[in-house]
Structure formats: C-alpha cells, structure tokens
Length: 269
Image (cartoon, rainbow, N blue to C red; front, side):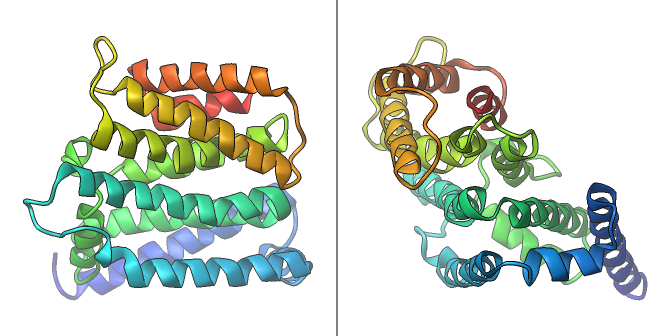
C-alpha cells in the first residue's frame, strides 16, 4: 500500500471505530456517550475506579511477561503452545471476573471497547498497514495454531465472545454470567494442559482426552464453588453442580462446533 495512503487509512479506521463505540453507547443508554462514560461509568463509582486501576496493572504485567511464556522457536513443543494460548484465557479470567461480580455496567463498556480494538487490530493486520501490521502479526502468531492458518485470525474473537455473550444476554444468575470466564479461563485451560501433558485415553472420534475432560469438570466445579464463596447467588446444590460440570466436560470434548461459544452459552441459560 502507498506510504501516503497508509497513514490516512490508519487514522480513518481509528476514527471509524471510535465513532462506532460512541454510537453503540448512545444507542444503549439514550444519553450523550462522553458524559455517560465519564460521569456514570468512570467517575460515578469508587468500585469502577478501583477496577480500572486493577485492569491497568494486570494489562501492564501481561505486556511485560507475554514474551517470556515458553520458548519462541518453531521447534517449541505443543505443550508450550498450549501454555501460551491458555495464559491468554487466564488473563481474560483475571480481567473479566471482578467486573461481572462487582461492576457489570463498566464491563459492558469494556467488552464493547475490546471488541472494537480487536476488529481494528485485525483490519490493520489484514490490510498490511505499516508499521502496525507486522507488530500485531508477530504478537498474534505466538498464540495461533492450525485453526488460525488463514488470512484472518479468529481465536481471540471467539474467546471474547465466549466470555461476553453470557453477560450481554443476561445470565440467570451471577454464575451464569460468569459461564464464559469459568469455562474458558479456568476449565478449558485445565483440560488443555492436563490433556496435553497427561492425556492417554481419547474420546471416540475426538482428539480430546478423558483425562483432560476430567480436569475440565473438577476445575469448573471448584471455580463455581469459589464464585459462590465470593458472593454469587447459589442456584443449585453440590450434586447437581457436579453433574452439570460432567455434562459440560463431555460436551466440550465431543461437540463439532466451536466449544468456546457452545459451552459458555449452554451453562449461561
């Protein structure tokens, strides 16, 4: 792309996505978006200010550590690729869980901004806008596997939607709204790491292992218990919870659809 056109495209895309975020906020609130964001969401609650500071700290630490998660060479093991990918899931848990429990309104805005940033970054990468495309591509390729070999990288979109949709759709309880964070950030991470490292027995017709699914079920059950202890409203007893986690583990292992969407949406209802 022409060197004089690239800056114009970059500025145009940035302005377009800022306008889209503001338009969505105005549509949802029926208020001036800047006044609403500053007066109600940011400055209207001490909890929101604390959460914004917490997000800044967590993202700063993640930015400093992301290159240190596992070897960076082509010969790096499959296990370390899983560690890098699932560390991204763990970051989502640290960012989103406090918002779901204590600052839901701010999290709605955060999800919208994150989605806009993801789309903007992918546009810059796909259109090869210098110098942003190479930086974004280098970052994303540390986390991609065979499912992201095409022109568009989608894994981070599925992770964001998996965490956000139970919240956007209004889960029947706090734990239902936490469905994406619990299943993707904790249970799916445990299943992937245990299955890759210790898995020996595979489900019929699936590359996933029974050992990984067992880790999924027990880690999800433990995470839901922690959420209840943190103040989430309890909707089912321990036996029912354990059965639900076992069913979700089997669904995660056997579904032919994208499990990052199917499992969170199943538990959220």
